[in-house]
Image (cartoon, rainbow, N blue to C red):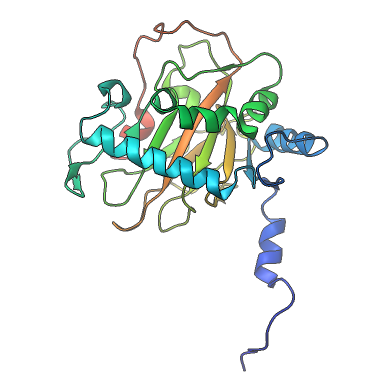
Length: 284
């Protein structure tokens, strides 16, 4: 017989799940700096696993404001009202699909250069203090070349197919900027319905002996689910994959950029070469 009495204790599945997410750290709401010893714990997790998920750093109102601004810029790009520099045909899937009457684009690139609000969220939050710290030593914000800070709308109604197993640095291994830490501001809860990340924890230090095939299951992989407003930091050499939404109604969106600790390059020095193998192999 089902027990319908009110529960006062945490459900066992929530309690067990908490012990199975060693990459998750909760911080004081709106905290611009992760103080000690919290900052040390975040850095330790990142160093060990190659990624860390930080929850609570952005206030809901900040996320709402950022969301509205990114939706505005996205629609402006699709209407042809935004500088063409903020589009990236090389990242888009082949073909065209209309969403709400507009030719849909999954990406808006160099997006913080199109919006003071977006730039302020990045530099006025925990991101700007924590990302460089995770790398250790000198680092620089690489937002001026190689697509800079990107907004992704990976909705199921688009032609987005996900990303096969890859580390980020493979897209431009010729650049001296690596290693790097990528930050992601999640604008939607992630799930099997709208897409999620699969990680090989620790693979930034010890890569797999054989390259994982496309989307195939890899022993030891973990699924990482994010909530709206979560900050995800991951290492440029970490092996990961991204699933696509499972239906046309599902939507997954985020904002992403990077800090690098390699040798800086001058603005305009990137020659435009970009190995898109992770997207091509996904069927895009």
